[in-house]
Structure formats: structure tokens, C-alpha cells
View (cartoon, rainbow, N blue to C red):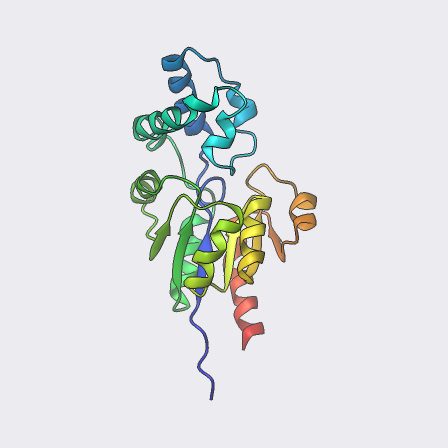
Length: 208
């Protein structure tokens, strides 16, 4: 008899588990003050997901971006941890995986030490955290950890799940619409993480 594969579910962080936008805006404003640049923070945070370097590229000379990114990450803990809440259903989604004998991954494009600060502050305990991976770059982690599914809010999260050959579950708490996520090839769309427990039960029943 073939052993049943382990239950492992991966989650994106920004705008999937946590509402990062306000904190991100605060850091951008602080960075802009230091650099003498007025970033269009509302526009830059409308669809969080791509790496910071991509967001900074239109507004800074290429040679300044690495140092600006380092400074952003240094400013981040002071400006964007205590003010950032968990999104509805985040704790319950983690609990649903664990109650069914599974492991929880957090796979994010964010700098891992700052991602861990968010998880610690909000009491979200991951079995494994992988930072600084984006889009299809998330596939290696998901495949290595034998994930059943990856839950995210962005079309690039869908790309990562599909590249890993795992189920893509999308939530509508980020900047991408249902149509955009479906066009990207996601398998499941939920309004938010409160739908994860019911989806998970269905997925496990289908797996047998």
C-alpha cells in the first residue's frame, strides 16, 4: 500500500496572511525622507508582491537601488511590524492545517528576518519560513517541502504554485482581481483565508 503523502500547505505573507500595505507605506515615506525622494506610495503599494527592487526601479538610479533596499530593510522593523494586523482567517488557516496533521510553510518575497518579526508579533507559527523568493522562484521551496498547495493573493503566487505542480489557492485580499487570478491559472479562489478550512477538507477528501 502506497503511503499517503504528507500534508503541507504553503502561504504567502504580504496581503495573504497580513495586511502589510500601511506599514509598507510608512517605510517608503521614511526612506523617501532620507533620500530626498517623494515616492508615490499609494501607487507603489496598490499591488504588493513583486520584489522591492522592482518597485524602486522607476524612481531611483540603478546604482542607488541596492543601498536603498538595504536601508528599507533596516527601517522596516521600526515602522512596519506593530501596526500591521493579521488578515481575517490567518490564525484559523494555520490551525486547520495543524489540526489535520499537517505542516505550515510561509514562502515570501520579503526579507526573512523581517517576515519572522511579523509572524512572532502576531503569534503565527510556521514550521518553515523561506524568504526572498518570488514568482516561479517559490517553486523550488514548494517542491522540496512536498507542499499540497500554495495560498497567495498575487498572480505571481499562482505562477510559483503552478511551476511547482501544486494546487494554487488564491485569496482576494491583495491587489489582484478574481479574473486576473483565474486568467493566471489558479485552481481555487477564496474571498479570504476564512475559506481555507472548508477548502482543505474538500481537498483532503478528494485526495482520499
